Length: 402
Image 1 (cartoon, rainbow, N blue to C red):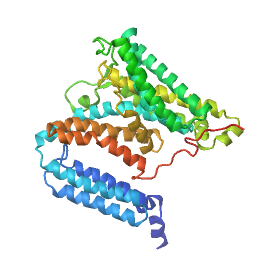
Image 2 (spheres, rainbow, N blue to C red; image 1 turned 45 degrees about the vertical axis):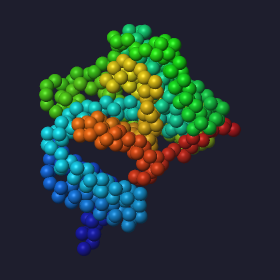
Image 3 (cartoon, one colour; image 1 turned 30 degrees about the horizontal axis):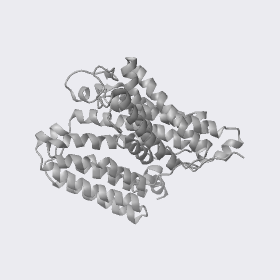
Image 4 (cartoon, rainbow, N blue to C red; image 1 turned 120 degrees about the vertical axis):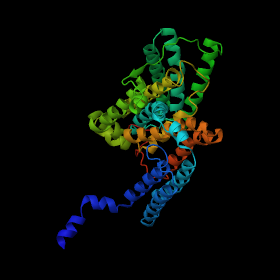
């Protein structure tokens, strides 16, 4: 008897009994219910989406009864939404489903997620050090304009990338001076940076280009050709942009730096307990300045992708970031201030944007609805409906050395 009890009382069984595990499983099953009718599964009956969605909702209810209310209700909502989307998918033809959920959807998802990944990782570095960077939107916008300007005048996308990073770093340095040295309110300061970027880019776009489209022939960010052919893998990842591949490397590198190196420990110490960090000899101001400037450079790289990547094709439009900096902040919060989590949230937001383009085959109203999904997910992330996110303790709190 004791032997059987010992076998049951192990880490695996404990995780299965954990309410959080059942809640997350319910969310996954809810998403799975929505995808049962699309390739490659293609279940053409409403029975399976309904059954899987009911199981997801039941897991959510069980999670609620065990005290995890937000996570449980999130699983219930995922189950209900999965049933609705699964039923709608069964009413569509396999041809339309095949044309919507194909390899290009994967490529477009990664394309839409790329600028969010750079900005979200940049915001993570800033907030891990204790500075809230609401100005990511403005830094992305500055990178979008000055990046394409640098590529236009310098004759190379490399020049444009360096110019964008430099301008992003400069704007971030200005913000860091107000937030760290002058101890200004970081939310107000970041909002001011966003308005400043709109004004600067608008003025110089009229002054330098006379409000006309930028001439063709600007050096664009290149694609990396890895695979050729008509198979699924080649169409999905065989021709991705160089910054998309760089975003994959950035997630891994950011994790190593923040959690596996001494400098990462110093960054986290400044964001959690700056007084203790200062006591042991860590220059809190220098760490915070460096992280904010780094966040500006990464956000600017995300911005140049909008103007110089596949979506922009060497053009600039007024306020072309269109709220992506705030979505990147939501992705960072969704990901609990961790690189992998931020990357996953960016992929989720990118998928909703890519799917909105595909849904134009069915109706413009459905496409418009899914275009609003990233902003809905932003509200969900900020409200903390699904899971509890824990920000660094000193995040947003100016430090005064004594």
